[in-house]
Length: 74
Image (cartoon, rainbow, N blue to C red; front, top):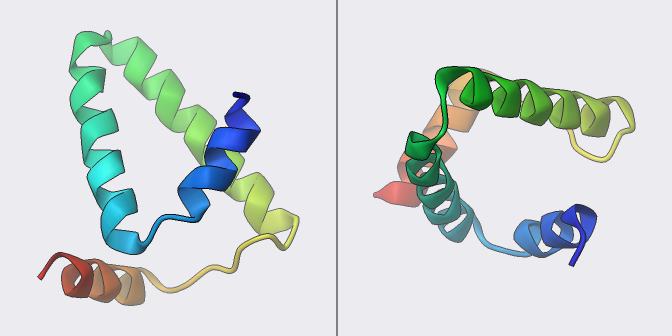
């Protein structure tokens, strides 16, 4: 399965499931060096910027994102 296929499947998950997956992924990063973790975050940021620039996603204010996250985990 390619990374693009995995991303497509992840986008099908609801917010709570994606949050759980993100938590698991972050926990697995404990085994990586600080430089490796930073490189992964840069890669993720670049992917998200590309999606935004291509119009595949829309941005929302941080306050709204945090509100949604709080609702999803409560």
